[in-house]
Image 1 (cartoon, one colour):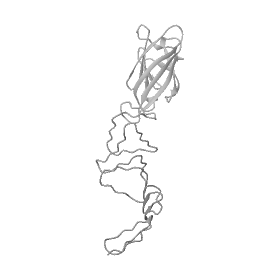
Image 2 (cartoon, one colour; image 1 turned 90 degrees about the vertical axis):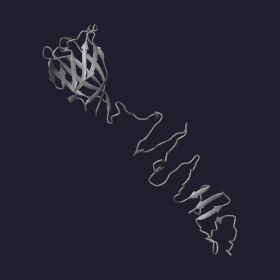
Image 3 (cartoon, rainbow, N blue to C red; image 1 turned 135 degrees about the vertical axis):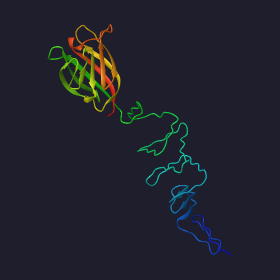
Length: 248
């Protein structure tokens, strides 16, 4: 017959192997006053306090839980395991989140950082610069100055940009109305010119501008009636606002 332990309202829980006397361990306890069970701890701090690992082979439902421990805060492994965040709930990540496999997001989450989607290629950078075009020192030339408005490229004044030539990173076509800011003076390479607009023109002649991309930022200057406008015969200054995307 097994030896019967002395019954106590709380403390170490008696156990046996089927023969011999009951045993107890200081780290397997029941605390009646607080209704707490401790496994591998003599002083449980919750209803069930386990110091060590827990293996569950079936479905476990935990309401209002915070899971912490070890090097990982929460780790899901073995293929079909998943983490389901209910509608209206919040998943907070205070450090880095690394996904080593495929991830599916059924709704677009709000982003609290500056993220440029673009064409989906990593490393794209959004930039805004201002281009000042003035009369060149030599006859039938122009000079350009590029300044940053926000995260944009900067280039000090380049003078005497002639038609049909590339000067200091600027190319002016043979008829003077097509000005290209080449990739040689742009950080990385330009991959998209999102906007180009004339901010200010001097004197009484207004200009319009069309823009495109090929080897840099291409600016096509024209009159209000749509005729191409030779910049080398334009008297005064012209400011152009540029918003573009580069590879770096």
